[in-house]
Length: 307
Image (cartoon, rainbow, N blue to C red; front, side, top):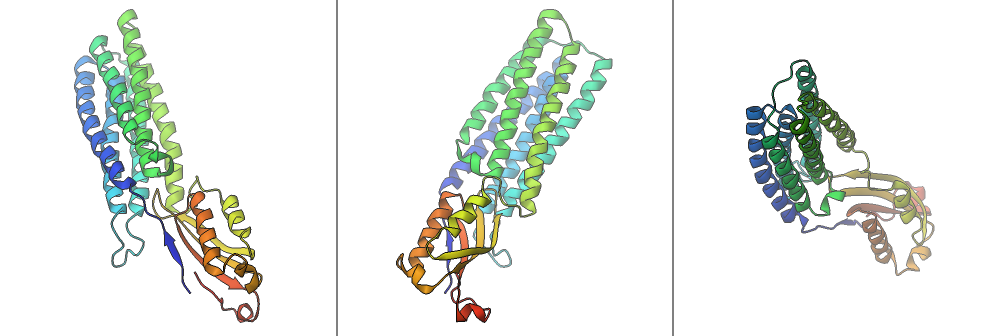
C-alpha cells in the first residue's frame, strides 16, 4: 500500500505580485541613485545604487524561480522545478557579495583621491532609498520567514534600507562640515555590511543545494514526533530535504511493534493521518512513509506495508 501526501498553498500569486512591484520600484530607484551619485560625486550613493541594481537582478531571478516552482512535474523533472528557487538564492548571494567587494575597493581608492560632493541631492536620493526599500520589503509580508528565495529578496531590500540610512547620515554630515572623506569611509562600511549579509545567505543556499535539511526544520523534533506515534517502535532511514526554498520533503521507515498496536488508533489510516498532522505542524508538507511490522514479514526483509 502506498501513501504520499503534499499540501499546497495559495501563496504563490501573492509572492509573484511582491516580486513584480519590488522590481518596478527598485528599477526606478537604481536609475535615480546612479544619476545623482555620478552627477554629484557620492561614491556611497553609487554603492547603494549598485546594490539596488543587484536587487533588481536578484528579484527578477527570484520571480522567475517562483514561477518555475509552481509548474507541475513533467518528463524527467519528476519533482517539478522547485529547485530553481534554491539556485536563484545562490545567485543572489553571489551578486550581493560581489557588489560589496566592488564598493569597498572603490571606496579605498576614493580615500586617497577625494572628490567634491554636493550633499543635498545625495541626501534626498538616500531618503528615497529608505522609503522604497522598506515598502518593497513590506510587500512580502510574513511569508519570507519560511522561504529562502523570498528571504533572500527581503534581505536585499532591508540591507539596502540600512545602507541608505548610512548614506543619508553621511551626506548630512558632509553638508554640515565639508568632510568629503566621510563619504568614502561610509562606502567602506556599507560594502563590508553587504559582504557580511551575503556570506550567511550563501552558506545556507549552498547547504540547500547539497540537500541539507532546511534550517527551520528541527530534526530532533521531527524524529520524536514520529517515534511517539502509537505502535511505532523505531524510526529508520529518516531523510529531510528542501524540494524548493518553501517546500520541505521527508521520507522515513516506521517500524511497528505489532499489528494490534496500530489498530488501537483505528488502523493504519488513522496512524498515517496522525503522522501527517504532526509533520505539517513542523513545516513538512510532503511526506512519504513506509510502515514495517516486526514479525514474519519483516524477517524476510520485505516490509508488510509501504507508504
